Image (tube, rainbow, N blue to C red; front, side, top):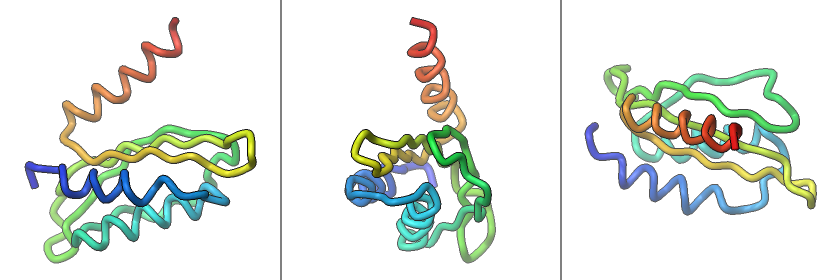
Length: 106
């Protein structure tokens, strides 16, 4: 899968609602990927405040890696969680990770 636009549009549209726990946000991401015939690993022991990580997404039919999924989340002032997820190739994911590092340094 070289074009991630459709998956990313779905992630963007469906992660803007109030999310109560980190686990429910990850489950929502997995559900969105599943609608595109993709799956990602189950994650346990998520940080209750915030986190940033990358996972591989596999095609359901072949278990071939289709791309990487960048995930970042944090708790908002109103007690909900805000999530951002994007699927891309390794170069795009490196850009996302380095953007976070640049922000922290300033």
